Image (tube, rainbow, N blue to C red):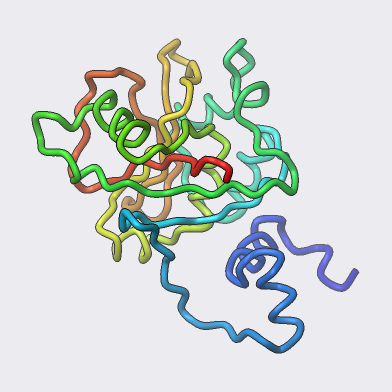
Length: 210
């Protein structure tokens, strides 16, 4: 294979740039050209992104992210490498070849006094009918949504409110993607219902299967 030596992260980035399997097929049929791609939005004006799972373990995700130039917070890395009963590998790996449709709900939809983890999740679940995500979406978000795209949508961070993973300090955490500090970051947030979030971010949920 001519390009078998290319890093997996590079191949995935090209794949995502072309729009997944159908986009690649259209490109090979000469029916599609590379161009800046506008985010799709749903009826609630929330950005919709489709990601495809690779079935990677937390350790493999760490290698892939570092190889692609993504910075890892040390607690985030400990969550990916966790061996506890709530570990990444047991509960958060994306299935190989499965497509996951996510939406980004801006945290600014709620005001300062109400912008807690519990109220943001309740809004996503009850008002919009979204579904709880899993932590494996975050490495893909880090590689699929560029710093420039996050800036364009006014988001400094994208939090995925999944079931918590215990970090190396014994604290329950949720994974997040953020920009700043020299490039893209895989970060963590506190898993606490009363934790109050800033208005310049987004919560990522899964779209229920139709």
